[in-house]
Length: 168
Image (cartoon, rainbow, N blue to C red; front, side, top):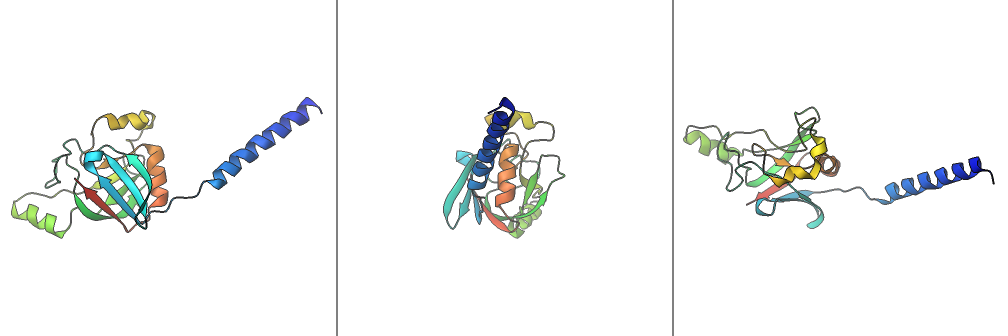
């Protein structure tokens, strides 16, 4: 067998193995998202079973629920992942439906804004190289941050309208 034929055979076998591994990995599909702030985790669930867990970074002042714009807290409660933005200032972002009606009313009665623009998102554009190291410090303005590869998985697994339960 010539070197050329042997090299071509090795390339075909390696490529076939790569395709087989990719094909064997089932796509994730989540019907619920659970965030536990004290554990710094985001879990994808399907029919109540955890199918994937991610370590996360939160708002810079993570203890307690978000009550006003600019408090750097991540909200607590049950919301919906209601839209996505591929053109955000972050790699990708999925919007969380915070604030709910009660939270808006409470803030209004205190003469403040409840805030908004809370997302599950990747890293700021141009900072993908930071990867998992971003989790060493809570750094968002109240969002839930994951690495770019992780937001790609979440993006594909979670359709708009999926509930997200954010717990203390």
